[in-house]
Length: 114
Length: 493
Image (cartoon, rainbow over all chains, first blue to last red; front, side, top):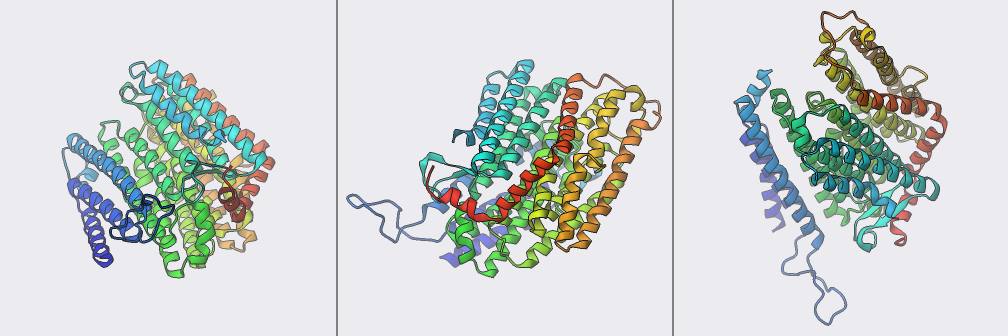
């Protein structure tokens, strides 16, 4: 499972970076989205995968018995998803505004404008 | 105890109050100024506690250290939070000279407060993931402040700025994920405690380089600084001043923090890499500055070049060099903020900061010309202003560490800075005007702010000895991690 998720994260990074190197705004933004999701998957995988072990102390017991999943990476990923989502939404609006102002969605054209 | 939370809480509350008065610009200015003054006061109170009582720690929600989030203020963090307060007051006071009404209506003041909160939080947090969150708080505020406009140069700059910063954040987050996987904690003190025993050279260097790349983008180090001069000259001067004074310093601070706590025993290759990058940043930044003909772009490149001084001080990793770097950071925050405000006056007077449109200001605005001399020549490290003392300390540090070529590079770059700033001053102020006239007055609020910041610069010159003593103590604290670790992990105060 770890290998599969690691590969998936790698593919997301590769695709994200490829898209970041493209010239169209939309592609750059999709690239940023893929990159942030690849990162989320990486945090999740690097934190260690445990199946079916909620980190909850059972009724009547005083302590947690392994195996249980580490809740911290999940909390980190949750925070990162929210932040990434907000930033992506902002980047989309900004790209729309750039398109409105400069009338182009091509990074090279933007540079030529000045 | 509460004094640790206040520098974060005060700007947040100020922003919340500001949102209640959206349509009244004058009221907003007063609220923002009051909030910034309170922030400065709370920062000074915190600094006083840290200075007399040692490292201050608070565990948020009462969760003991490695499990909850700790806020930690050591001397470096406390001094930088005071600097945040100073910049906050300066920038909000400068708003009285007039802000573009559209910007003011769309949340200029609350966003600036959120920015201050993000910066203060980044300095005070004791948890790496929390540092990421405060980075994002600060970035989102800066994104909106930068993009609140529709001229083509400004939107273009904003898009570059947003993209490169999002990439840097992704790299930072990647490093955090891998670090958590390897160490099982992100609390800085806990990491400093466990990391040396559990890191393997392979993962250590990978993580160090990931952090180095992420923070170098934010700090503006070669070869990752090109976004900075491409964007910092476009927003209005007060925003540029806040960005230039604070944002890159957060990157430098994060580098200092991670390198002193985590990677102090990493391979020497890493420090050589950082040193090479710092020297390249200084030299290339200044050569580029000499090539510019726009006052604000000259400033941006000078800003980049001088970030190289501070990271060079860090990469030598000796107490003296690090103390020099800390002193230089404090000096630089005040001076570069002041210079961007000076560029705001130029912008008011001539509607441009291009050198071609300036000139003759010494005749038409003698008071402003003399005031502007202080930060300009302080940045140009003319003795006895504070820039000179900071650089002297760094040069001494490099020589003491045996890195003569770095010391030489610092000296050459200092000479080039003098050339660049002296040329900027003589072109803008001394040269006879070419038919351009002053459109309006410099704005008393801006002039007063510049005067106060210049006074602080002069004050830092006279108080150089106690200030350098503080920097030395702070560098000692950074290099002897035990005190930090014990303060955070030992007991929950």
